[in-house]
Image (cartoon, rainbow, N blue to C red; front, side, top):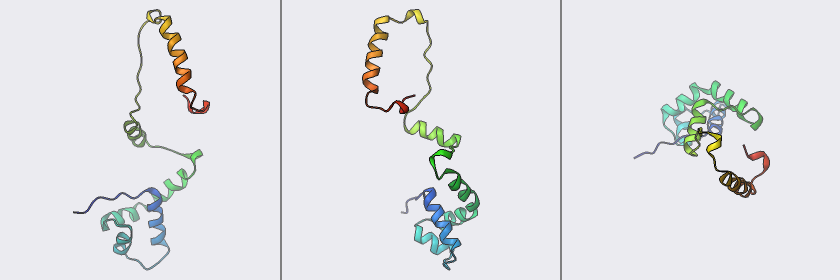
Length: 117
């Protein structure tokens, strides 16, 4: 039974460049080289302009653009969620606040200041 293989964006770009460099390889030969199906190879070639544009816009960190789907999957994978804590500020015990202030500074000691949000 064959397993599904997903190529990274870099692998797809290499695939497209192999096709463009006129090595004389057919879609089937390219698919075999990258161990993907012929239909996957054809889809990559069909979407080559978009993939090349995505690669050029995301190749350095300063211009990174994530889609909403990518962000949602990233949050799910790393168990990141948005939560709001509701309640009256007067209902918080001051000793708890002081304890967490000290605890938080201990927790954050191992992190760079620019990595804490």
